[in-house]
Length: 529
Image 1 (cartoon, one colour):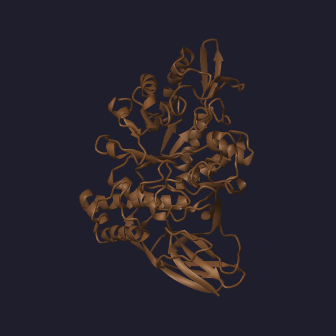
Image 2: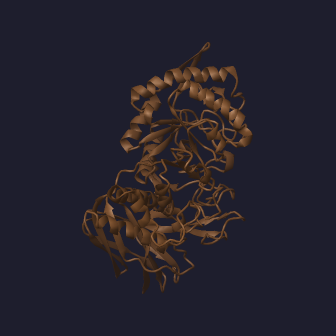
Image 3: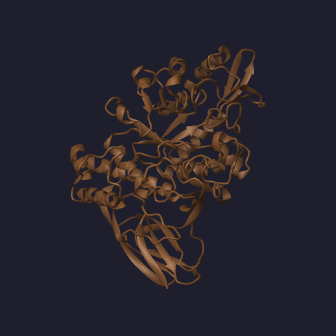
């Protein structure tokens, strides 16, 4: 016999703990929305579990939610809003159901199901002959197209390393496209584009595998640029539905002191850690690059959808250096948009860039001051209740981000790791993400990636990616409601019954509240036809 408990996507099922959440019976959803739910189960004897799903007018995909090891679930000073804080196994990997699942007596497991409906439907899930049925009502409103620009940094070198493929060889291109499609399918519509090997998470003096889309040759003092690969990148992204492009950083991380690694057509390094970013050679290179790249972007029809980076996460000690680099880029690429992750408002107040991206635990001073508000999170956003996506965090903490992005009218969101499978500073490359989920006990598990390297060059999703996608859909559902009843009325629906308004750090900390809030949004939409 099996114990079966239907659950929302916001619960995480541990093998050694009975789920404590109320059973999930179904919900309303909009046309075009993808919903996830799960069936937790436990067997009273060793068994092989077979599943069957029946649903009319719906497309379902099923996965076994697999536990993955975590040596570092959280930092010692993390807040109390975690499921667990001890090293161990955490549910994360979604492995497609291709056959029976062998289970041991008394252990809890989860069958994870994603659903898209063409009409209201009931879904019956049967495990070894025992069935449960859930009801889903499709309301007559389309989920609006996503307007938020969302990036999780896409690491081409990690794909080449994981699959043993030559960077931008034909096999690598096929793998890259598979992963880009997965990213876009989950709301990541803004793609890190490696003009040159991105100078990110690289130890000083070290290097990452070369992944350079722009070909460079030098004759005397003249540089010649080959944009063939870059054109292929834009075409591939167009097929996949990418909306915009963040061109890789033109100076090194944490201070903008040096040039990124740039090689010529023979593989000879032209610039790198040895290059003073103020040096005349690199300034001349950037000048010639801009003169060639800008017309190419215009010819490709993507210039207005491209964003430049100067340097990632400069601090106040770097502001003078950053100011010089930002002025150079502004002069070389007039009118082009510049974004960077940084959390001190002075960079914006001094006019160094118009689109700063502060962390969600440092965003308050930017609200109401910066017309185009962006935010990000990474390992540093582990306390104070702010949203993040670590293994050990409850699902509601990941999903609440959608409500927050909508309320504060954010234009963009950034996270640094869609598929970063290296150690810290890329000292060790191609670590096994099925075994090492924290970069070698450096970042809380889940910070560096949301997908795993599957077979045949195709990604395996995490349940965190599915929950994050649901957050983006919550944002879009609120936009649909706003278009019907206005922003203030939609905000009243979201915050109904709350003693304090929602902020990036304050909100009801429960899955039940979040699901109820989304139910109110759906119900109000259904009544506004």
